[in-house]
Length: 205
Image (tube, rainbow, N blue to C red):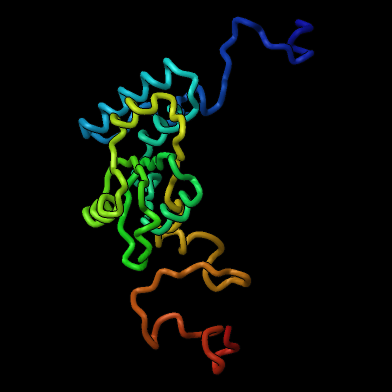
């Protein structure tokens, strides 16, 4: 017999089985463009693709990557958080690849004075409050003209896991050390009120 088969060597002319890769199962899941067909978003992508290619700015690369992202990865940022993050950063531009929303609990409009904010979208009340306080709301194409490399810009983002659905992720509801929220049809005496939820049924958690 041939020695190479005894030693388990592979003939270079034989086909190579690479498992799932050979069947085309493994795909690159990194987005190269947004799924949205919004023409204004597509123009911004064109602009920041050019800037990220022609400059060495990590800021432009990050903005481009966030423009590709799904809506759930572009969480909104409220005025209260915006004021908190920009405290002590006078003269800088706040940049949010997402929506800036109003916060009715926030009553310190003087903290928005002279603030320049760039975002994909502003709610009506948020824009009105920023402008009334002496601030400025600009778009990404205006930002590209003012700061092509992102100098004096603070890139902000809302809380990624603030959506209600994240409360249902984790260890199964009811198992020890689980704080996961269960999916229930309704809130009432008949739902999620058995063992572990009342003293008369085993124990009360």
